[in-house]
Image (cartoon, rainbow, N blue to C red; front, side):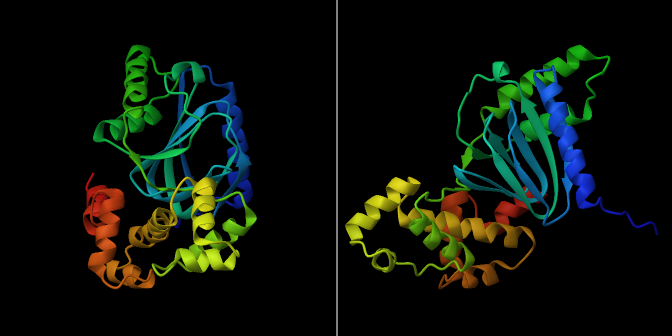
Length: 273
């Protein structure tokens, strides 16, 4: 049996640099390419002159920028506006399909990174866009695929998988500690006391720093932490109890409220497409 050798880190870095050059040199409105990375690989800070739409076909990836952190589980997509410096971390082996879109081809000039759910049509179109070579003789068909892809991508529903981090070092420290040891038993009074603040002052400052209440931020952080484990096949019970939920039902209720489906149904839907 032939064992496929994974590319070395230096090879991936060289390939990444070549891809960035190709993206900048592209003349077509949409430049679509596939990428594969091993688990644990880190893409250094970079940006593109084009907006990037990433389809996570396999594995979970985490994108970080000054705006915050975004987790992209399998069968989801991520919009990264042009010019935003970001890093990417692979949580397990990752296969992604990316569409780099020229600014003049976009009607949506949003400057905010966002995670979106994929429709069957969007999924089929980006797979087709990557499969079609630029030098395809059937240029008319390619143009139709790219035009419909752009139209569909802008209609995709946003998912709450972004996790804003405070710029204030004191608040950021509390948030990082929570990410390392997430629990449902975080109380506003506890965090306020650690920062020698009143409850009211802390609540206002935390919302100013993150745009969210502590309760909402904590729920999003719990989903953020749970998704890679659930995607890897860990039992829902184990994940729920580790996060400090008293029951699977309580965790499932929170998960359904955040993502629109219970954990098993959520991943069953992703696997079945």
